[in-house]
Length: 46
Image (cartoon, rainbow, N blue to C red; front, side, top):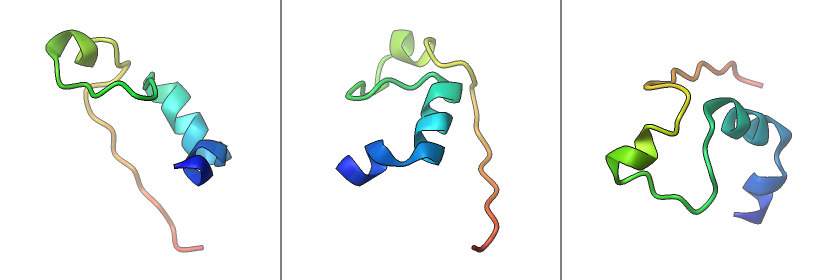
């Protein structure tokens, strides 16, 4: 988990989407805090 928290790209996605660490998003009120309803991730092989 520590490696993920240090990754700049992952942190940028978390900030853009509006995610909060340690929040489970299992309640409708939690889901409403997100900025987007769906996310499509497209990656290129590096």
